Amino acid sequence: MPKNSPQKPKRSEAQRRADKAYQERTRAEKNATQRENFKNIAATFRRDEAERIAEIFKAHGVKPSEILRGAAAALLDGEPIRTEAAPLIAPKAAGEEPASESDGETDSGEE
Image 1 (cartoon, rainbow, N blue to C red):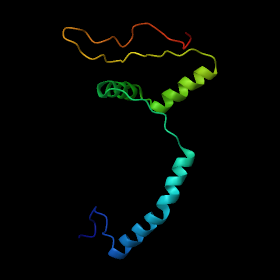
Image 2 (cartoon, rainbow, N blue to C red; image 1 turned 180 degrees about the horizontal axis):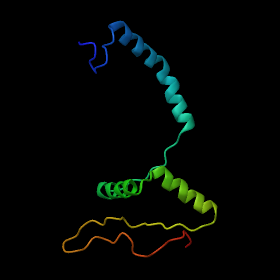
Image 3 (spheres, rainbow, N blue to C red; image 1 turned 120 degrees about the vertical axis):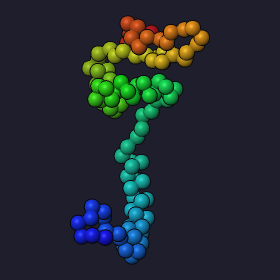
Image 4 (cartoon, helix red, strand yellow; image 1 turned 90 degrees about the horizontal axis):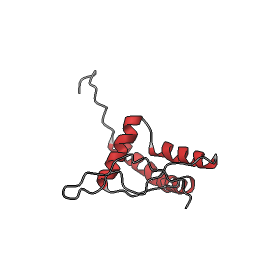
């Protein structure tokens, strides 16, 4: 390998064994820390709808966590938020147009 090669130097077998031993020692601690300090809030969508939502978030430069935090903050402040029970992308039936992304209806959570 030439001196100015952009490749990383290869690690010796002893270095790889030491790396593996370190990972095994710390793995349990890392997993426990993750379980104690983090929790997922998830929603399940049809694949096409999930891809569309991800595209919208990317186009606007926001992450799902930012959307959830913003919605929670608005609710804490007593502000209504728009919710959608219907999918953004309706299954395509023969001859039907897909549902509009914005039909003007809002749901403040009050029933």
